[in-house]
Amino acid sequence: DAGVAGGSAAARDSDASDDAELLRRIAAASGDGGADDDHPGRMLVSYFEAHAPEKGLDRRKAVYADCERPLLAAMVAHAGAVAEAQGVIAHVLSGGAPRALPLSPTMRQLWSSLLIARRWLRKQKRGFDRRAHTLELRRAPR
Image 1 (cartoon, one colour):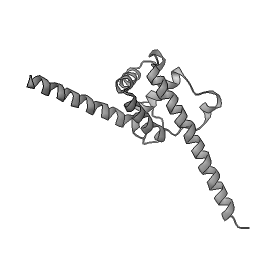
Image 2 (cartoon, one colour):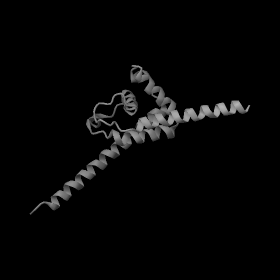
Image 3 (tube, helix red, strand yellow):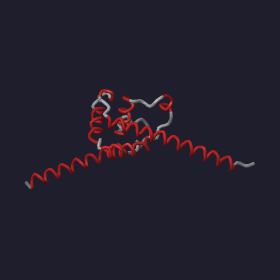
Image 4 (cartoon, one colour):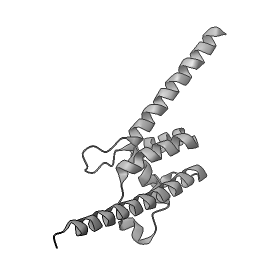
């Protein structure tokens, strides 16, 4: 019995470290600033966008992926959707179309939450830009 319990504990530890590694990879910055279609965070966002694209003109607005990805990783972990995210990433890596996998209610909620965060990030950026512009006007010689 002790050997079985030890074996299952080792399996749980291995699963936990695999989950942690996947979450780290989702949260990681893209690094080169170029196309990152093979980035796990980008694959999840592509999956979400295939099922429920951003509405209207929002699709053309800026996306701050290096801010969104750590948030996405945290949401995946807290929603208990690591296995589902891993399945989506494996499917896309194997050449499958993101649209081929159904969007579960949990994943739909994650996407909705990420879109809310995306709108908030855009609003914050606009506020920073306005404040910077106001400071420049105040500093301009008269």
